[in-house]
Structure formats: structure tokens, C-alpha cells
Image (cartoon, rainbow, N blue to C red; front, side, top):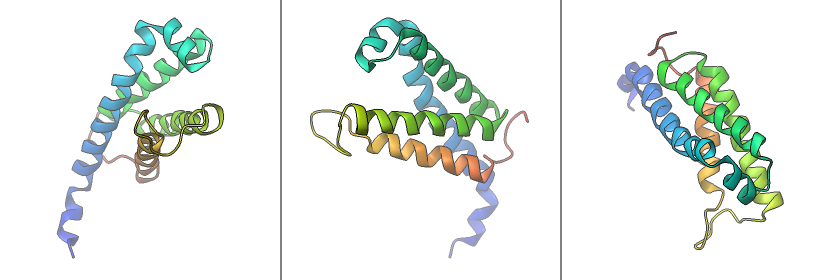
Length: 127
């Protein structure tokens, strides 16, 4: 039906990469600024929070500049699997809740990371 739009796949992947990267950078920065406080809230060691923030930030830079796109997407997918596990198993947070963030947001970030991973992320970037 919209076959002519497939010529813009690279632009679509680039937009998806940018949006995913912006979200992960936004969530990585507090881990650097207040690792100890975040660690207490997450029930993790501060060092693990810093590693998590670094993985999110560096993977996001890879997505933005088109460097190691699939590796970056793979790492972010692993991060999101961990986030969903923490929310469902450890913290017993439902899929959606009015009083807290459910894991539906985490699921869409996992899906977007998997799309980038399997789709290759397009050709726009430094590669």
C-alpha cells in the first residue's frame, strides 16, 4: 500500500535511533550524577549503577553516530530485559499503574532496540 515509503528506511531507522538514544541518555545522566542515591533506590551497588549508566550512555552515542549500531542495540536490549526483570520479579510492578511507572515503557524500548538490532539500524552515520 505504501511501498514507495520504503525508500526512506534509512531515515526511519535514523529517527528511531535518535529517539531511543535521547531517552537512554536522559536516563543515564542521573546514574552518573547520583550513583549512590540511585543505587539505594534500585537496590544495587553504586558501581553497578555506574556501569549501567555507562552502557546506556555509550550505546546511545553509538546509535547517534552510527558506530557499532547493532552492538549498541544489543546492549540496550539487555539493559531493558534487566529493567523488565527488576520491575516484574524484584519490585512486583504491574505492566501499567497509575501511581508508578509500569514496565510498558521498558517493553517499547526493548522492542525498539530489537528492531534496530535485527534491522541493522540503517546506513546514516559514520560507519
